[in-house]
Length: 418
Image 1 (cartoon, rainbow, N blue to C red):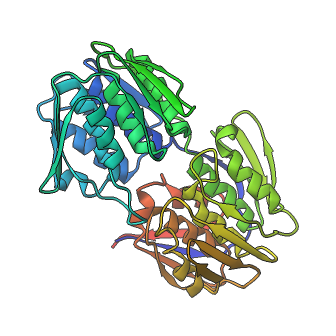
Image 2 (spheres, rainbow, N blue to C red; image 1 turned 90 degrees about the vertical axis):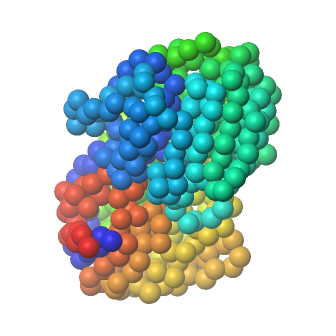
């Protein structure tokens, strides 16, 4: 496992460009399986999760080339397998997103139940409910999901919870189904809209993405398409917090301000100055940070993927704030690590009570998951002494060149590979 070492060097200043969104790239890579001709994708972030997904596509029979930095060309015209093994899926929860495209295009799939971060229960029940509603015979045996249907049929599907992954998988499967599919209580995250845009460029008929009701009219076949991935709103938010937690000023480029509204509202409540343009934000620390309360919710609520980073920022605020986590039950595992650095945080059920203005001290801490790792790096930027974030490979699953980007903003940060 890698280790990130951070030593305090004062306020971060400069400009940083946000990479393409991991959580948009992964479903779009899976959707390339639907096309009978080549797909060309731009602003694909260089992440271990992305490489794992590309490896799964290769094993399914896709031909993959890298024509330019950040671009991936995928030829899915000659798929040789409809199965993803446990070895393929154990490292990447999003691997299950290949199920919908394979089932729709080839009438069958066999996918090992996926792995990923251990931040809470994320069952695939809603995915399977959607496949069954579309006419597939679905079974779970020996750790594998098997689904089969010669030709899927459009259906009305109500999701018990607005699951992003289930919405994406059902959208992709329904794109080649006979008739119309209506997904109600669908997820409304920006990544859903980006997938719908890509599917539309492939020839799919998708309406309503970005609302809680999505209508898909199936077509006989889809072609490949060219598409640029939307900016990563979580990476953008992490750099915004980095500016504020160090008392600095950073221009964060390649963003969609609309996607960041829940975060910018809370940061402004805390006294952070944020000036936005169409595709950038200048983030400057105020004279003092004030506490705030947040409650994580599906978009457009406050994103669960930003609560640990904001918790790190709240340790610098003058007062007490409360974070309520409603999405994942194990999302506070990082709190013990922040407490090792001197933070005053108390867990009460699904809430964390954060008392600010306690000095943070650098020490050895462990990244328990991707976003927890980011929070510990942020804390290290303003802690006294050296911070060593162990198990840093978690961080590289979701942040492209994070140490290098922080270094260009003035941070004293290095990576040691174990």
